[in-house]
Length: 465
Ligand code: ARG
Image 1 (cartoon, helix red, strand yellow):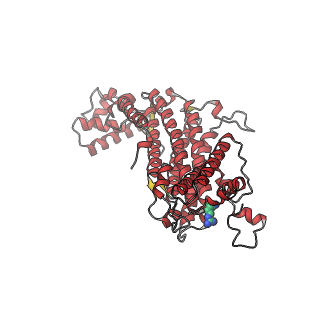
Image 2 (spheres, protein in one colour):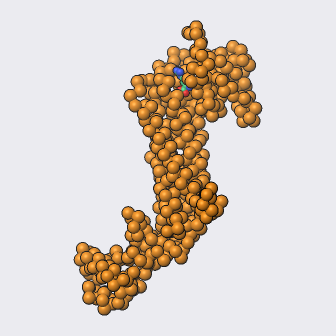
Image 3 (cartoon, protein in one colour):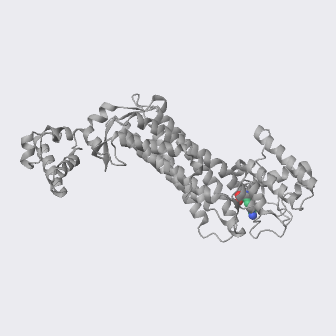
């Protein structure tokens, strides 16, 4: 059914019609379109715009279609223009005039934003649940490895000893913010555009508050023109998805590095690896690489939406039809990547011996040697200089760690070095000394894990700005 043929004598050719159609993308709004139409028809009935029995018939028919959709028996006609015209077409075909009455006081411009918002109110919390489960999987591993030593890096150079628990909790903290970003966007999205019409509302006595309430929105949107022109919610969600995917891409980059023969920190399970078609020995971290690569899509989708809106005159223009494909792809991509990353991390094994061994060599204890001197009263800048000199002494003598140097030689650089320096500079002692809030000390990491777990339990849907 074409909703606009009254004005035009000519019809577009098939290829042109298909070009401007959006059913392939917006068919996933079918349930929301039915729900929105039910709420609109019920409101029209209450307001006396439709006779009560017409409203009731429409409601029965739309409810029946909802059921058919859930059962999978509703066949969506891919030749229709969009989901809105398809559904109006079906009810018109089945009911005749009542079907022709449902669009009173409504435009596809407010209808499509309504459907889009309703869909996101359903889909985004599902996506957040995937992220929460991914955070939980990371925290489970972090807990297991609260005492597993590993080198921490800056500039991809060994910096200071930390624990694997500290590193994995860092990832979890980033994903926790992602969950929050989605919640923040949902707060602003939670307004109902129905009743905004094409751009200028309606002269019919619609009850926008009632429609908003029946659909579970906080209230109606403020301004009809803004309602049909605004896609901030899509931008914000695409932004949140791009940030979350950027996080996953960084985690996956770490995983790829850790899985290399040079590092050998992680053993990715075989079922989360792939082989090579030519090199028989290969076990490749393809899943991690692909997640890293897919972050390109979500950044691209965000750019698509920004460009779509840039300079677009008020209010609606057909350009906006491109919004859904971009956002759906971002949300789908993040969902599948979160699931794949979770599976890969849950089954990953870590090479504790190797990671601990890498805490020696590279002088990761140098900062702690400086701190040791500071504790004994040396000014920090002086202590830094002495520790650096000691490192150079060690390198010149072929020693791999400050702990390999004799006390006598250490004391030649500072008489504040005492026998306790050797215990103080063991990787575990260095880590345990860093027990400030946020630090890598095992007890402190366990506290961070608990804070994150408590946040997840308290429920992400309640979070707001
Ligand atoms: N399929 C359209 C979209 O997704 C629905 C709105 C069409 N409105 C219009 N005035 N042509 O944006």
